[in-house]
Length: 78
Image (cartoon, rainbow, N blue to C red; front, side):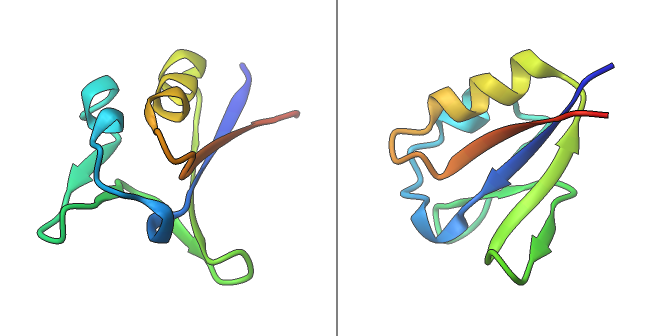
């Protein structure tokens, strides 16, 4: 089964909330109007949040829903 890495740039987020619309299970709205990626780990080198998932449709729907491209998806080859 393929894995997908969600890479989330919280600094770029404008709070459009499209990501929550496509997957409430992955995203949570915070008091500052931006979202957090549930279960994500902060990558100090890239300064972005990362999470590995197995659902291609959810991954790409999240990416497509962001008007400022704060969400990127990378397919991880085994």
